[in-house]
Image (cartoon, rainbow, N blue to C red):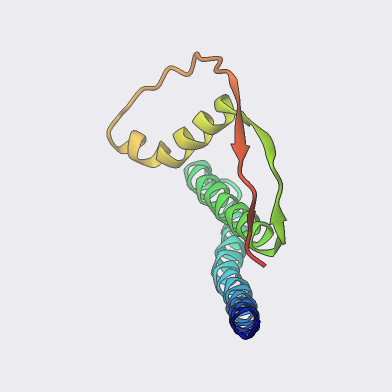
Length: 140
């Protein structure tokens, strides 16, 4: 009986330590997200100022639009990371993945490199949608 109580105490101590570490991770996640969101917001503010001061400069607007979309993508990733880190439990189930959208996002991220290398891309595709099964995980 003493051995059982001793093991139970060890489990309780381990659980308490795990809760503490998870709270530290949660705090760290929020701090990192805040630190990443701030420079992206500043970039977006400067883009708006440049656009307002140079309304007739088409080429600059083209590049500014790419920067803006990239900053939007980065901000979306930050929000998704925050959503993921704040959820107490990820359910079993599946999520529909639109491969056309995934491919478009990849092409958009590579646009500047493709432009420099004069790559011509023919986007005539109609990809399927896949289900991505998630396993149950618990962080908190």
